[in-house]
Image (cartoon, rainbow over all chains, first blue to last red; front, side, top):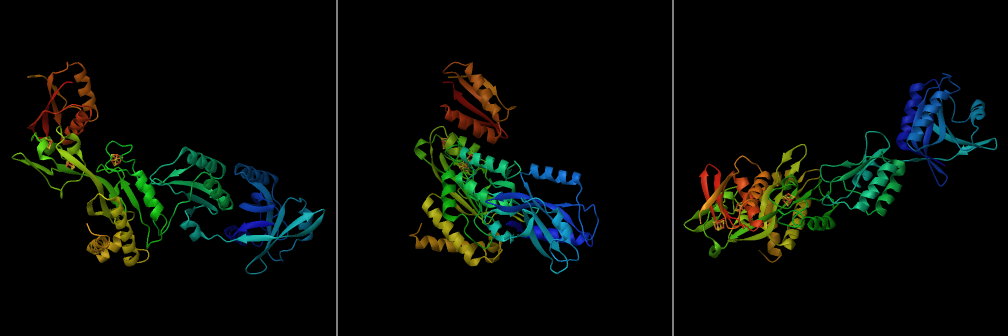
Length: 424
Length: 76
Ligand code: SF4
Ligand code: SF4
Ligand code: SF4
């Protein structure tokens, strides 16, 4: 059996029509799996006979094509030629040229519209028909599963599910193997901590997916769903971190990744006010923050904290410190620098909603400045996605929905959710 | 106890500010009181956080001018 993909047939038919009334011809390269020949590349050639009933490819050109096949790890599967005015049946002359029992000879007839095609093989001098299967390519379904069509027909960039930008060495080995064996030996790092493997041929997709799985790598999500959860290193690695980010990223991914919504939806987690991960770019941005609680008894009124606060949120007035929490960005510098331990830092999350950094830029709005309970935060996430599903129109980014219905509506929805969950 | 040395770090930027300060401190004796001059809020925050992490206590802070700070510490 010989397997074509739909776009290859379209390409060949177009070429045959262009050559009309001369016979068009070319070679087919690909791979053989359990006796099934799968076409990966179609190589057009010049018919040096320039005849309406006969074709011939120059030896030099054949050699050039075989070289190209070798470079792509393909084997010669057979050839094709067109019959501009006669049916897809081998002529006496064609039969004389069908000599190799390992090859399939495909004839495209332009006599009918749409054109027809048949495959032939030869065994001990006998020519018989070879079954041809044409596979459809469902680009949309592939894309939703993280497999994106490339400019070049038949090739795809495979996007992986990576959470918090972390990969194990074992996974890297899998990437290395797949990219060098099936791709073009490169990997692409996406803007959101993802990895894509370009130049994967459609004929290799199933194998590639299996291989990746064996290394603990899953395919990513595209389209209108919850995307890769990004995160910086966070508290366990970065000394500035106010929160643990990597575990949180995995928890969020486990709970929401790939869920369908009106449009794409991105979570991003940054460990502190330094904002290395740019929380406000995301539909839902999470930032680790510190809330400084002043301990009067320890304070010597030295004034250091008032001078280092980057947003001047601290004032010292007659031995009394006051922190303006509306202004405070939660960087925690006052807590870390106070020489007399006169602050207790309470750590938590600050949440921003409706960020987007695509064609239109929108900075996420900080609706929840401080929340310390992770559990309650997850209730907020649940409610937010529920709200978007309910209020968002198909194809509408979250910020657009928020602009249309008003941020206040989401705030109210979240408050109601809080009450249902026992308040505060 | 009197300040025996003033180290002016205004021309440095982080992280060099703290590196130079550490190098200066290495030549001093335990118990020496020193003044350090720093420029900019960020530098002040970074240096004071680092000092605290290394076990120093800022004893006094004065604003010498627009975002120019003088801090007093005692060498360990
Ligand atoms: S955002 Fe904060 S915690 Fe995260 S890497 Fe940057 S400095 Fe570290
Ligand atoms: S730095 Fe600490 S001791 Fe000094 S004024 Fe601020 S809270 Fe008080
Ligand atoms: S946490 Fe940062 S922003 Fe908030 S008061 Fe302290 S120094 Fe200022």
